[in-house]
Image 1: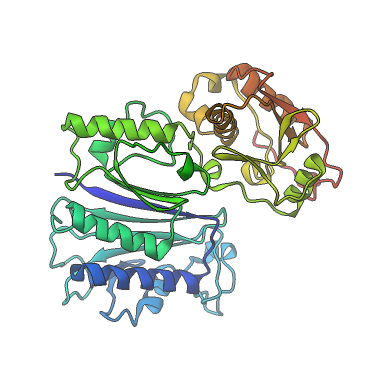
Image 2: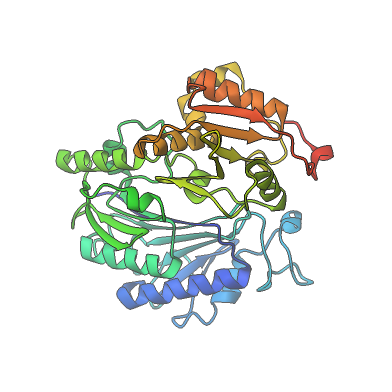
Length: 403
């Protein structure tokens, strides 16, 4: 037997500390309803384990103590009290991190559990770049949870509690056996259970899938490989997992902002509106992706970005050795976004060319080299154009260098 991991992501939703605590509380109470064995937890603090009360009455104070920012990192956290402790209003640039371990009713902290191998529950909530994560590790000794009915109950609780964008349950050995090309970075990985929420991708999934599918809504689907934990030596299951991964790979979900969307600040919105002559909230959907606009007179799909979120103020440089580094190139947002846009056009059997517009001349040249030269995307399908931002860049004078 092998360790089974449940992993979910929540995009574009930020948590302050009070909201994070309440989200954790709600999830723990819901878990206890479907699995009373998961009623007691210890929190891993700075130096030791602290037990949570059965009614979770000490949850906030215990998490507050466990995640108290060290003095040198306090500038990354807002709204601390006079002693440097978190308050309910606190927000953290890099999110709040909590680790819990299942314990017995008589737990007093430490590692003396009624279970020889505890279930581990980890939270990473409120990250500034809009990606929060929750994971659960079920060791081989926890057979009570390692069957289809028990795991489905946990999955359904997690979906109800977190409303995630995607969720996966997989044994690591099975995943490695089922996915032939391990070098491709993936944001959606075929496992035992898969859940996906996306208004454009879910409707584009084939009617017949390698997994048993439960369509929960127009934009939500739950997929399951079977009632038993899939094994890496079961060639039938491995083939099904590989086939399911091939379906996911058609959507080129190789970078999280491609899956969740790239958040736009006021300057990004202004630039988008400048290029498209349309409101920033009005997109042009083609199959499973959205373009910023469509020039009907020229028959061209438009995509306009300053890429502030992606570049963080740094220039984007290509070095010769990167050209043959498939994992590195495949994980770049620019590559994943371009490939997804082209795949969406192919899916819709559309032939319109795509124009990318960027406000930096050097970036336009670099992206042209990356997309048209290195990846050999025909210019007839996609071109990159330098279009200055008439509003100017607020932080242009503070640009930084990675060299």
